[in-house]
Image (tube, rainbow, N blue to C red):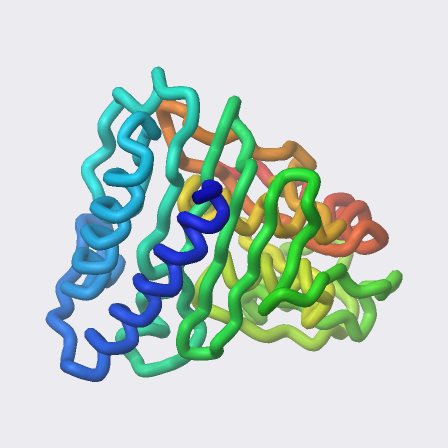
Length: 259
């Protein structure tokens, strides 16, 4: 079984578990830092670690819900996993959460799946093989102007008075899962997505490949692409857009100094 077939099968099984666990009632608590976690996050993580680890015992493992093991840094390939990306939506009964799984080699994803089980949407990509949604090829929008663009982000951020140049009117919406947001841009359902706050490798790795293979641009707010399986998995920010809008967004946010 190929890496892609392996992670696709595992993502679908994990998505089914996430849905059934939510229907059965969740135990919810807060992590250090205040973000929510549920018993289903841990159950899905355990399922994926078992399935993927048994099939590829020599691969490293990086997951939001597993204590990090530095041994991954010396492996040739790694699984980079977010068992339930968008836990806030998940625990509120909303559909905007996803299982995100990437296989990383030499710092870059070579296979990726973002599976949104409540929406029956499965985004898939392999390096050099294009990107698909439920088996059909995807590509970003052809919007060339930020005015009236369909933007995923925090509406309050765009109207903050401190911007040197005010943002034009845009149709701004939010989706809890960052991986799912990036896939929506890759598929042309939205024109761009911005998050000027830190994310982790497991939030981005699978969607990074899906965006690249679809033809969307994904960087931090300074235009830097991402490298994966680093000692510190924290990444500063996210700017994702079609190729026309991406430089227009960078010109507006590149002055910002983030921690």
